[in-house]
Length: 560
Image (cartoon, rainbow, N blue to C red; front, side, top):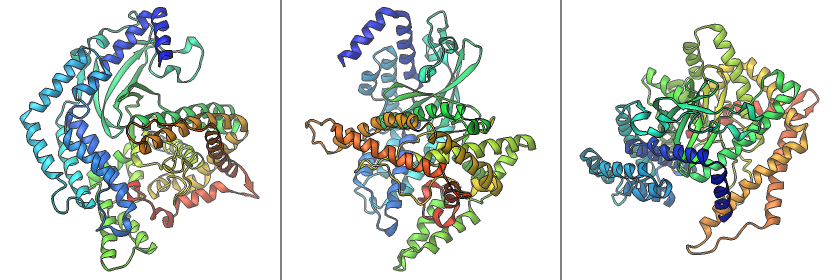
């Protein structure tokens, strides 16, 4: 810690203006926090996701499933800190020591005195009273969470959709290039010539409030000295450690782009990971590069459900109802029952043409439609390869952001799928990557068998050729991942007041080498041909197979 202090002291002497300006910008970010409606809504969505994960683990006895201690603690904490959890005075004071934090503390106190807030808090506490009979049943809790999410979504829709920066953030409003020479957030994530770094000319006057990344984010527009306007989302982080894990994967993809641009077969196909810049501003807050024209696959699904008058969560409810009905007869759900559930959901709630219908209504010009579909096909091939080869977490619909103006697709919250107990990369999953009926219907069988498969093979061959370079990148990134896993495990197992131990060097080397070998093996398998056949075709068939899709968690939306 003293080394960091020494570096900061030297920097302050060398660049006093730049450093004070950076501190001023970070200090003003406190005004872009969520209000209490938005904060509770985000936490309820997290709670619902946890409950759905537990429900799938206990799908063998749906009616008997109860809340896990971990989820119970999370919800009890949410009840006790309802509405002022993140915005409490002590939490703010430790992060931001300024006049802005004092104003925020006053706002938190005013919220607590609001009669509407008090009434809602009383109802919330009554609903989540776990001493009531049946309150510990998991599916009862899921229904309560869904009810409160609806209530708070209705409340947030009535809130203002934008605000003026000068009302709250005088420093940002008055900032210009004359104040200090500050580069755009994330400019230094990849090295380039000093002349090409874009500086902040000014912050645009209006800030929009948008629903993205499962939270109510503030979209800030920054004008660069080159005249372009760059939108950034100010996102409140749910979990600090997971956020850093995601940034590791993004940095790895950024560095892999360098090889994709240099190799002939990948360059001619324009294969390039769309990686947004992500910069941590404080322990609870990040700046994420945004595209206002991007929309998540889950949002597309919700839009189409609204048009058809279908409840977006209905397929998940139907899945567990069918399982409970089979189990009530004293039997377990067979593979055929799971296939029937998938077919039933596709027939009644989520037709396999849903994404194609959305694209046809969005892109009325055939050229736009074809270009969007072609670009999305290539992006899906890159996402599928990354998920399978690097053993990343499963790709949920809310993680996929489709750029309507270009067909690019950026992925958020992608992390290495590390086993909590052993620390090894998890390789056991029914489908290798996301290629659900809606996606395969949109990009057509020809697109799946042609451009998509060819792009996967070209990418795998590109990354397996400069073999030692990719392995070196993987070692550097996975070393940090394994150290973070060990620290988390130590925190969970060490008794309060105990001293956590550093990871043994030999163990760290072995674990990293094992993970790198697992990734390299998959990469080599995809890059090589057996006669005229490639493993990529087999993987695509496995990802698109209804027999495999019906075994997936319904929260992953295998029908979408």
